[in-house]
Amino acid sequence: MVSTNEIRASNALINDATGPRVAVFVGGTSGIGKFTVKALFATGTSVRIYLVGRKSSAESMQAFIRELAAINPKAEVVWTEGEISLLAETKRVCEIIKSKESRVDLLFLSAGYAPFGTRQETSEGIEIAQSLEYYSRILFIQHLLPLMKKSEAPKVVSVLGPVWTAAIDLDDLDLKKPGNFSGMKAQTLYVVLGTVTLEKLAIDNPDVTFIHSWPGWVDTGNVRRGGDPNSLWAWFVWLFLDPLIRLVGFSEDVTGQRHLFQSTSAMFGGRGISWKGKPGVNTLEKQDGALFLVNYKCDCTPNPKVVRQLRDKGQVKIWDHTQDILRPYL
Ligand SMILES: NC(=O)c1ccc[n+]([C@@H]2O[C@H](COP(=O)([O-])OP(=O)(O)OC[C@H]3O[C@@H](n4cnc5c(N)ncnc54)[C@H](OP(=O)(O)O)[C@@H]3O)[C@@H](O)[C@H]2O)c1
Image (cartoon, rainbow, N blue to C red):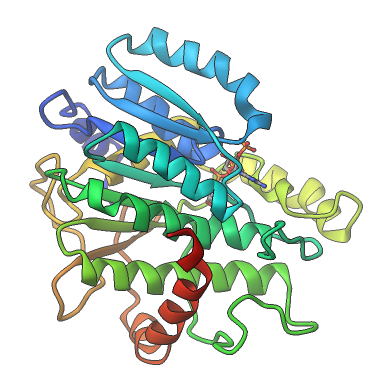
């Protein structure tokens, strides 16, 4: 475990010379992304962040943007509106960022929720949480990679969950077969898809560091997002899960600091704020490239047996399927 003191000491070294100068936050309108934005602003560094969010959050974001300006007048927020569950919108947002910036140092992806209700699709025919937690995230990465390669310490951080099984149905990667959709299956699959595809992107782009973060329990209201309000799941969340998360979950400050550390420390891949402790364990075994599966204690959990199985049996199929879906928006 990386201690809170070590994390705060590392984050205290973030300044104009060492920290990210241009960052894109997708999912920074609430929860872990928002806490990380606040922690980044609190360092006082001159960063410009693109805060990407949907229209329904625009009004509530004005107060947050004013709060950020008061915390750090040297930093800048560029509110960038987009319905990022739609791939066409994701592409449009990326085009805006590409037209304004020549480099991106940090891409922080945290939009999404566990879909513990009935299957709901976007107008593009993709299950909403799958679009937010997988397809749209990969599309952001593919669009912004050329800008990230201009950075000295480019980092992609995708916040989702731990990869714990290789038992997925490779013939139904969108869970569209009748009766094949459930919240648990979906969340497990989206974590697997993210890990496998981030690994492929890390191999193809060894100059960029990729992190797949498992945040642990954080009281953000995320568990309430995905279920039908009158379902048994909603009652379970209200009676047990929410109070439990409030009791044992990580605080806003700790979560923000830990994710800022992951976003900036050279512990993961050697680039960024210098790190004298034990280096993180890269998931890639023999190839160049940097993918770190990082848990809520900032320990690396490469889970080699499961990841190797997924790589061997799924990487090509998952990549080809993903590119088939994303091609019209690339
Ligand atoms: N919190 C936890 O304990 C926990 C644990 C394990 C994994 N995770 C996963 O980690 C990620 C981040 O979690 P979090 O707790 O920070 O999440 P969160 O605060 O509930 O939401 C994160 C972001 O998702 C966006 N979002 C949700 N539904 C959307 C939709 N239909 N269209 C567009 N944007 C949408 C939100 O936008 P708005 O602000 O506009 O609603 C927000 O920016 C999620 O994928 C979550 O499933 C969380």
